[in-house]
Amino acid sequence: MWRHLEPGSSPVDWCEGNYLISPVIAEFVNTFSNVLFFLLPPVLMHLFREYGRFVNPGIHVIWLLLIVVGLSSAYFHATLSLIGQLLDEVAILWVFIAAVSMFFPRRFFPYIFRDDRKLFSLAAGVFAILATGLAILHPAMNAFALMTLGVPAFFLLLHELKRCQNGRVYRLGIRCAAIWLVAVFCWVNDRLFCDTWSAINFPYLHALWHIFIFIASYTACVLFAYFAVKDECPEQTPILKYWPRDDFELGIPYVSIRCYYQKVHKSEI
Image (cartoon, rainbow, N blue to C red; front, side, top):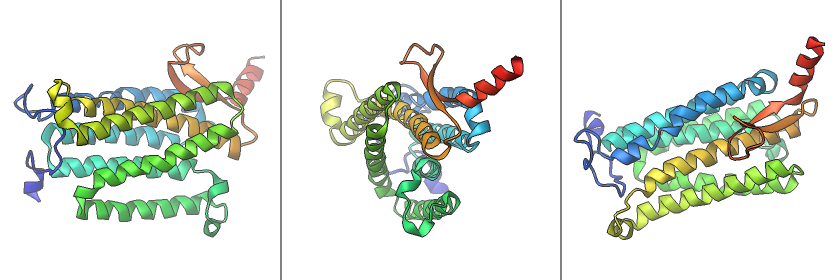
């Protein structure tokens, strides 16, 4: 057990050179490129406080798990230990399962779940536990296996966008899909073509992967949170907004609930 905590015990080593900037941090740029995982989730918790109150408080679990992903990834790249690798990959698995449990459309549920989201979420939790066990037993396969999880999510997003009549939501969805593709490009190139990128003195594509995949992931959660309200809470009206300025569509997107503002307005009158 203790040897798995030792620096360099992981079989995975990314393109960035080890201990070139700091004598105590293996991959310095890869480690600190996780900063968005710490900075944005608290902001999202604040912006989604109405959503959590009136629709689903579980949305905050997603933001907390993203922080866990950032912590695990930073620890892994700082030490390149096998325990760090497993923590990183298991954290990614659990945030994905949590999002699927919360946002996967009911109309696509297998018949066995009979339109019951609680039962579906329970089955997803069991799957996550089994997958965690397999990840521990076969860590060498985890990275490539986890990459495939984004593929069905990508196509589900495109499917939902085709049904969407809101131009602002559609534009955000297209940006999200494009950023996900750029993130995958960075991951694959860093993993498979390290020599090429090192030859031009830019072995930092995995750091860019951290930045782009965080943006794509939280944006996808925002979009699916919007779709979930449209599909399952017809009494509510979701509104896609941006912070700090709603007219600036490159800000931080979030979902507001119109009925909340109506209640506040009536109380003020």
